[in-house]
Amino acid sequence: MIYLYTKAVHIIFVVCWMAALFYMPRLFIYHQEAKDKSQLEFDILHKQFTLMERRLWWVIATPAMYLVIASALTLLYLNPGLLKMGWMHFKLLFVVGLIFYHFKSQQMMFQLARKELKWSSSQLRLWNEVATIILFAIVFLVVLKSTINWIFGLVGLLSLAIVLMLLIKLYKRYRMKGNKKLE
Image (cartoon, rainbow, N blue to C red; front, top):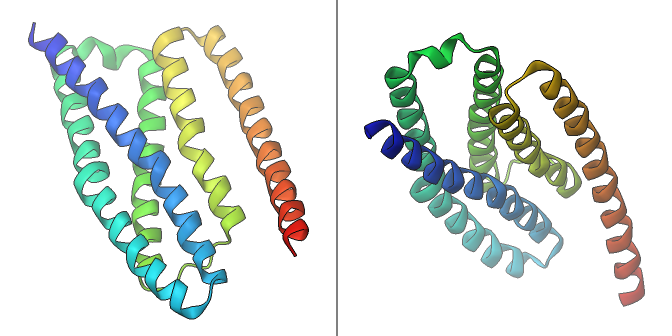
């Protein structure tokens, strides 16, 4: 019974963590694009985005990540046989990648607050998709579990990444055309 309660807590906080990881780069994009505004507008937006980013990070993203890790360790303790399964090794590898993504995003948040982030909004849009790709990999691994299915899942994941990059480029062109019409 404790295993199932722990698993439910794990899933709930994975959703919370992922929601924060999906939203944070969007805030970064808007924060970075605020530099294109007048100095007065930028100063106001910078202050507001910095506040929003910090609240999201310290109230939702970081506590959720630690609760995901704690519940995962509890699940592995309660069912150590999971560590003998190949798919779990790959899943844990992707989770380590997600934790790296988390702390890299935190670093970016600090750089934005200090007005030092050098990434363009296009680069941030690509960064925004990294968490999506990692999430797809983790979910496919957990659901499919077998190597052959995982290979097909990986091919699908790479295809998804390519499609996302193309869509981002198309969206950028669409936005550029829209901005020209406004001039």
